[in-house]
Amino acid sequence: VQLQASGGGSVQAGGSLRLSCAVSGRTSNLYATGWFRQAPGKERELVAQITSGGGTRYADSVKGRFTISRDNAWNTMYLQMNSLSPEDTAVYYCAGRRMFSSGYMYWGQGTQVTVSS
Image 1 (cartoon, helix red, strand yellow):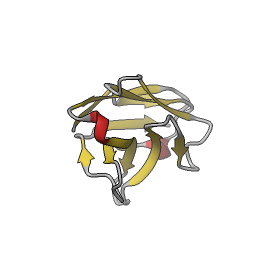
Image 2 (cartoon, helix red, strand yellow; image 1 turned 60 degrees about the horizontal axis):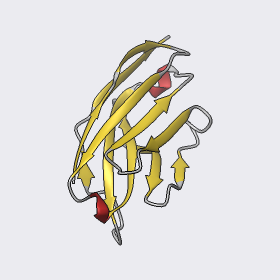
Image 3 (tube, one colour; image 1 turned 90 degrees about the vertical axis):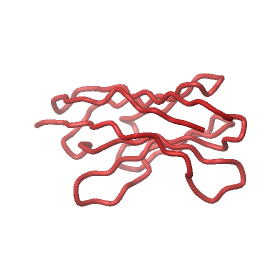
Image 4 (cartoon, helix red, strand yellow; image 1 turned 45 degrees about the vertical axis):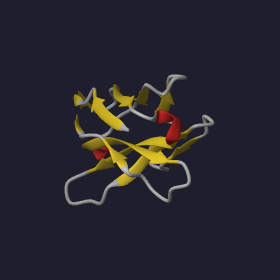
């Protein structure tokens, strides 16, 4: 499975961005795809996840502001980010998790999101 993220950029606080992740390969093997982020000096964290059944999970810090979605064929995954704050500044990565696995093993390149105050 290959993933490629896009859509990052610079925005002022309170603004919105929409990230996209192109997913290709044997998506039938996927249990979930998700968005992670890593800010300078911080560990990478899971921001949002969507499963093969459509279930979603969010980090507490983004609940109510971010929405993860995907198309039915799982060709593309999205992260709609609203009410952005400087604390959301990070490199965002999309990733895939295989069925019956304990973690994410497929990773795309990161896309930078910068929120200015």
